[in-house]
Amino acid sequence: MSGMGGMTLPHGYVVGLDRHTRVLDGGRALLGGHPTRLLRLTARARDLLTGRTLRVRDRAGALLADRLLATGLAHPLVTELPPSEPNALNGTVTYVIPVRDRPDQLDRALASIRATTTDAPVIVVDDASHEPAAVAAVAGRHHARVLPLADNLGPAGARNAGLREVTTPYVVFIDSDIVLAEDTVDVLLRHFADPAVVLAVPRITALPGPDAERWLGRYESTRSSLDLGRHPAAVRTGTPVSWVPSACMLARTDALTKADGFDAGMRVGEDVDLCWRLTADGGRIRYEPAVRAAHEHRVQLADWFCRKAVYGTGAHPLARRHPDNIAPAILAPWSAALLVALLAQRRWSLPVAGGLAAVATVRNAEKLKGIEHPLRHAARLTALGSLASFTQGTALLTRHWWPLTAVGCLASRRLRRATALAAVTDVALETLGRGPGPTRLDPVRYAVARRLDDLAYGSGVWLSALKGRSTAALRPRIVRATARPRSPLPHERACPREDARPRRTPAA
Image (cartoon, rainbow, N blue to C red):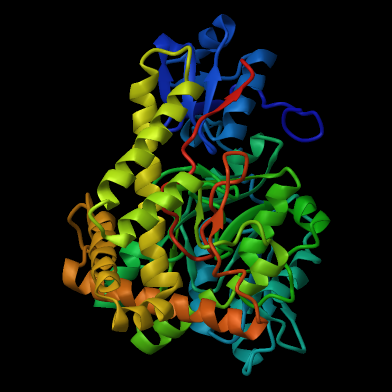
């Protein structure tokens, strides 16, 4: 069924093929998506595409566009979608801001909202501030309603309290340390022309200022846990963007109400849990980097380190709620064997790894029979899968398993070599291709910050595992082609997909 409730995409809706989607055989097939699949197109379906874009003009176009969106082969071209009517935010959107003290940040956030709209209702949920009068005074200056809470419920509980007061079709949650750009909400609203979309978020970037020029500020400007990158994405488990942060999000009010809002029992990771529940129910979530919201990053070392560790403590609660999504690495049998062979560092390691890659390439080629040059495309998929499995292995050594790695390095020279290679390689891969600019950090300080990031986050994961008396958040999974590809842990950058084997789908 296309869309939700049988509704289809409207006429004029435009989608463009994902940058990784390959057009094969003169337009007769598409290869890409998550998980990777081969989509064969009928003659009529080919005629609906203009180059790498499709504009919906009839039901057939709506069905094909919906298929491309559902498989991750394409994304909406938000700049081509019709803009909202003037003053559309008034009477359509309610803003909810959870806050505990921090009146200066709240004043800045409210000013950014009022620069966009003057009449949209704003609810400031005071989560048991120590100085509630200061919060109320700031809210009053911006004509915002204050909803005081007697007890500190945390961000999830505070957002839920605000959600219960919302009467508009859409709700925007923003944190008090966010500054909205003028067009952010207006552009995000365009995504809801797709009736299946229940939530949309902008790219979270660093708030400019003196603190952003400090070395940790520059690192966060480059690799913030909240910044999910330059490219649009469908948000689903098992894809490069499997969750989105709640620092700034626009949602359908009825969809969140039906889902009972955020899990108030979670003090961290509640945004990850919400995303996974919404997508499990069939809703679509869009990540839209064409618009941004600026975030005041933490730049004091102790404060920054502790916050990264807190992010890690969300691993075990998420593992209890979503056991299939939380593994730090999910590998196919061949790629797991390839990693073990390389880690062994024996004379036979490279020949065995090469043999495993060759077998995987042959199997991929068999799945691609019927298209031109199947072996060439299969070799590319295997290479991408090998790279992704390698990056997952380096993350296990330096991030998720670092306490075990540290102990093992005391006894094993091979492990020391492997860990040193992992520490250098991931920094090289992450900094490769970054352009010059004020947020650029030199490789040495970037490497130091990256390793501190890993130590903090990994410590949080282990603390949550010990507290929960479970290793579920630490155990990798070995799966076959029918299983899901990996989902990165919350507040962790995703690496390229490991499961690169194509799956066939019926012709459109």
